[in-house]
Length: 222
Ligand SMILES: [Zn+2]
Figure (cartoon, rainbow, N blue to C red):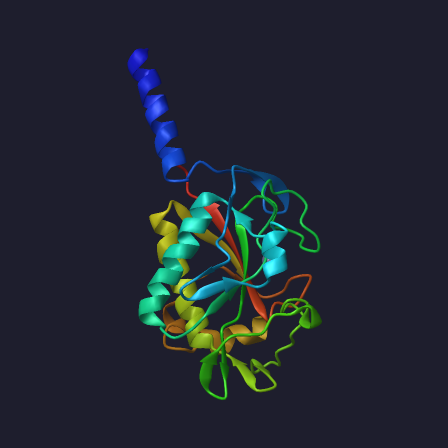
C-alpha cells in the first residue's frame, strides 16, 4: 500500500512539475478545462493576437497543448526563420462557453492567424480593434488581401510541426478548419504536399484569416 501511495505521489509531482496535469472534460463543443495553463503572450517567433485578449485570459489551453505549440514554434525557428507567427483565441482558464466561438470549451482548440507575405517578404498581420483583432480580415479565393498574401508554405510547415509535436506530447490533431477554396494552394506548396490532416472546409464562419485546430489526447496506457 505504501509503495502504491508513493507511486501516486510521484506521478502527481511529475504531473505538476512538468505542468502536464491539465484535464479536458467533455468535447470542444461542450466541455470544461481543469488546471489549464495560459500561453505566453509572446516568444522569439510568435505572439498572441491581442494584449487585451491575453489579459482577459482568453488564451488558456490544456498543458499538453501549450507544450505542443511551444515545440512547434521552436521547430519553426529553424525551418521558417525570420517570421513572427500569431496565435488567436484559445479558451477560458476553466473552459466552458467561449463567445463568439462555438467550440473552444475544453482547452483543446486553438486558432492561428495565417502567416503572410507582404510584397513577397515575410510579415505579420496587424491585429487591432479595427479589424476585430484580425478576425475581420477578408482574404480572396487566391489568398490575397490588399498587399498581403497568405504564406501557404509557412502555414503548411506550421501544421506539420504541430502534428509532430502533438505526437510527442500524447496528442493528435483531430480536426483542422480552413476555408475550402484556400486548401488547394496550401496543399500544393513544398510543405503542403506532405500534409495529411483531417481538414474541414466549411464552418459557421469563414476560416480564411485563421485556421482552427482541435487536438485530441491519445488514450494513455494503464
Ligand atoms: Zn476556433
